[in-house]
Length: 430
Image (cartoon, rainbow, N blue to C red; front, top):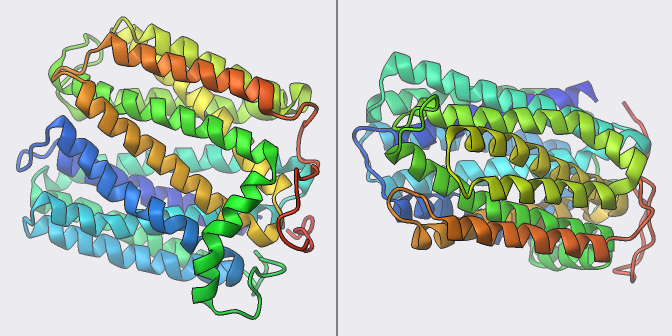
C-alpha cells in the first residue's frame, strides 16, 4: 500500500509543478496575454481531447498489467513535459504550447485513473473510504507543494518564456521518480485479476472500452447518481473558476490583492484547505449516515457557498473557496468509493476513465459558457444564480435516485447484468 501511495504522491507533485508552471506561463507571463475566451480555449485544448480518447484508452487499464501502464505512462509524461518546455522556451505560439501540453494532461489523467482502479488491490474493502481520503489528502498536499516548487523556480528563473521553460522541467524529473517507484510492484499485483477482453488484442479492447465502461456505469445506480453529482459540481466549479480568474485580474479585493499570482494562490489555498477537511469529515459521515445523505449534504453546502458569491468581496470569496473545496472533495470521495466498491475489477479502469472524461468535459463546457456570458471584469450575479440552481437540481436528484441504506463499501446488486460475471478484486494484499 505504501508503494502505491508513493506513486500517487510523486505523480501529484509532478502534476502540481507542471500545472502551476503552465498556468503562470500563460496567465501571468508578460510575453503572453489571454482574453477570457482564450483561457477557456486553452483549457479545452488541454482537457477535451483526452476526454474523447480517455474512455476508450481506459480499456488498457483493464487489459494490460496496471503496473506496466503506470511505469511507461509516467515515462511518456516526463518526455512530454520536456517537449512543452522546449516549445515554451523557443517562443512558440500559444496554440503550439497548449497542444504539446495536451499529451502531458492525458498521461496525468491516465495515471490517476490507474491508481484509483488499483487501490482495492492494496486496501481492504471496508476501509476504502478512509484510504481514499488519506491518499487524496496527501495527494492534494503534494499538488500544492508542486505549485510552490513552480512559484520558487519562477522567481529564480523569471516569468518570461525562457524562465517558464526552465520551471516546467521540474515536473519531468518528478514523473521519472514516480515511474521508478511503480516499477517495484510485482507483475499483476495491481490487477486486473481477470483482464477484460482476454484473448483479444489491445486494439480490440480499446474499441470496446467505452461501451464496457458505460454499461458498467448504467447497471450500477450508485455510480450513475454520484457521477451526475460530480458532473454538476464540476460544471459550476468551471464557471466559478473563470469568473474568479477575471475578477482577480481586474479588481482589487483588499486583503486579496488582484492582478497577481498571490490572489490566485490564496483562493487555491482555500479550496485546498476545504478538501483537506473533507478527508476527515467524509469517512465519518459515510459510516454514520451513508453515501446518499453525505452527497446531498455536500451539494447543499455548495449551493449555500454559491449564493454567497452574489456579493463579491474578499470574505465571500475566501469562504466560498473553503466550502467548494469541502463539498467537491466530499462528492469526489463518495464517487471513488462507489466505483471501487460497486464496480467489478474487470471494468473498473474503464469506469474511472469515463468518470475522468465527464469531470473534464463538464469543467471545460462551463468555461465556454462563462466566457460567453461574463463581462471583462468577471462580475455577473446571473451566472452565479444559474450555478446555484444547478446545485439545487443535483441535490434533489441524488436524494430521489440514490439507493438508500448504502453505507460504506459493501457490494450492491446491479440493476441489470452487463456481461458474464467475473471474480471481483481480492482483499488486502499489502
